[in-house]
Amino acid sequence: LIAIRDSAHVTIRDVTLRGSSHWTIVPTHSHHITVRNVKICNSRVQNDDGINPCNSQDVLITDCFIRSDDDCIALKGLNFGEGNNNVERITVENCTLWCDRARIFLLGHESRAEFMRDVTLKNLDIVHFTMTAFLLEPGEDMRLEDIHIEDIRIHGEGQRSLIRLKPA
Image (cartoon, rainbow, N blue to C red):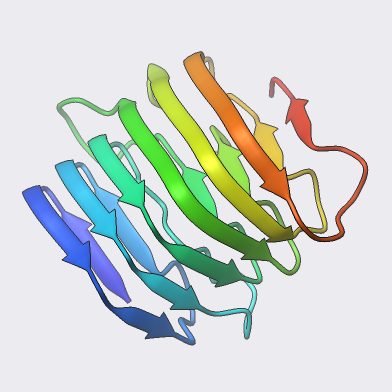
């Protein structure tokens, strides 16, 4: 629904997004992006990820509610061109997350960036998940560094596996 490309200093705030047919908010090759007090109400179709920062830096996702069928938040280092392809300095905080079919967080899957680093996931409420909530899966020789996960509360059901590191 919202594609941000090659941009800087963008804020999305105080909106409700419903029924996305694919990835909902996608900052690509962008930096200094803030997503604040956004409610994403999906879970109607597969591939309706909530927020997917791709090859972006300095992204803050805060005070959000995300319900999706696919991943709530997926960080990807897809190679869309020249310049800084890394995913760096991403913070997700103070959010409520609900995933019906896939993962709450997916870090690194399908990524070709050199680094995905300095990621902080904190003060989060997980309402529901069906697959491993946090899948850290660095792909294609990408280095996954300085990932901090803290103060996570799980209020609903999910599978027994909470965090999995799965090198590709």
